Amino acid sequence: MTRLQSLTEEARLTLANLADTAGDLAVPSLRLGVTGLARSGKTVFITALVHNLIHGGRLPVFRAAAGGRLSRARLQPQPDDAVPRFDYESHVAALVNERLWPQSTRQVSELRLTLEFESASYFSRKFGRGKLHLDLIDYPGEWLLDLPLLSKSYAEFSAEALRLARAPGRAKIAAPWLSMLGETDPDGAEKESDAQKLSEAFKRYLAACRNDAHALSMLPPGRFLMPGDLDGSPALTFAPLDIPADAPPARNGTFRAMMERRYEAYKSHVVRPFFREHFARLDRQIVLVDVLHALNAGPSAMNDLEVALGEVLKAFRPGRRSWLASILSRRIDRILFAATKADHLHREDHDRLEAILERLVARGIEHARFKGAEVEVLAMAAVRATREATVKHKGEELPAILGTPLPGETVSGESYDGNTEIAMFPGDLPEDPDSVFAGLESGSQDPEAQGQVHFDSQHEGVDSTLQYLRFRPPKLDTTAEGMTLSLPHIRLDRALEFLLGDRLA
Image (cartoon, rainbow, N blue to C red; front, side, top):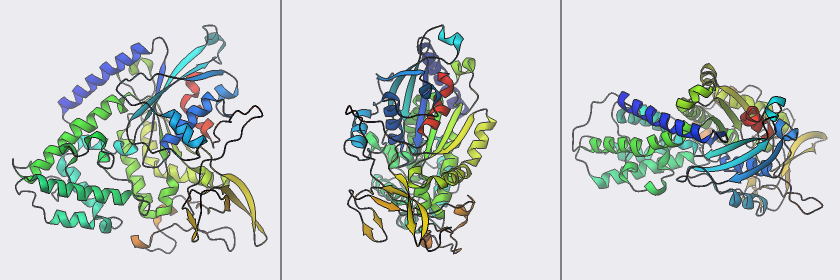
């Protein structure tokens, strides 16, 4: 981004912040960004958060609720008329009535929840009941991977994409696109049909990287897999070319000039508006990470996830909260990293799951804390789909989980119908987080051999493969009066206390 563009963006952000501050004079607001890479549980998190606050869920660590000071939570019309509303009602119906997981995040959406509370401070209570507008901003984490593109030229973007595609864990997946790229002359004449073919091949490569077998995360440009209403536009019809990172500007009329022009259009019409209108206006952020999905795919996926999260964290604007400074420029003063689907493991492994996540985001944590932001890491399940149990194996009692696998899920060749509850030992996570990045216990460096991750089991005769299954949402209990209870969770209350607790004190 040029110096002039940077100054223009900051001026726009200052005007937006002034408008937001004026609107907060009556009732203060807190804009919480909820993000994570594909299938990390963003939609489920927001739905569970709202459902528990509205229905008075069990939140013992969330002090405002546990102490009876949170008197009411209700949905309000959202403040941004041009942003789609988060479809809370449909998502709740899917979870509670149909016991189905809601559709994944495909675009930016927003929901406003107004919290009424009594302050813990005697002095503050004298001024009446407090109110806080909680604006929940849901957006795909893949879009965050685009923000670093603002500071990269097309040549730099291309060189980086080629380096990733030729790495051992990706070379076979990228082969069809790389083959087509090898037949492309960057300095040849521009041709729309060639641009479309090369762009489609590149998008197929990105989609293949993301499937369950590979679970790779570093996949910019993010809108290529979630095009929305821009599908087919020239701004989404480009691809990297095999050129050096320091290549000089292309000659007009060449194929490379065409690709460069569209790359810059992508930044101007897609990336910058997202940064200005949504991301740069956040006060706090939760980053949801599906660590188990990457673990299931092997060390290549774990290393790729670490790189992707590093890129995501570069895009954040962390800083210490200051009322005066926030009038001109907002900063994210609290960041929560949450390893989701902790209910797929026994609680004895939750500390290890947190340790792996902390290892994944170590550099980002250091940067955010240096800038003055508070950071926390935890293992959680916004909706708990399993229960814990103890099973006997060869006379030994083993910690297990009970749940109903989704239709089509398989274990040891047995497929489930979506109605049968099973007990299973999910596997032990390693005590040393670094071991999941170092490779398999066999020492194989062949990416094709790096399927599921194996760890030393402490239980004799038990398969130590980490088995990651997808379970159906739980069947909710009802009260004697026929009222449905709130969605069960693991540490959602701890997440709420960190993200909101100080604003309800």
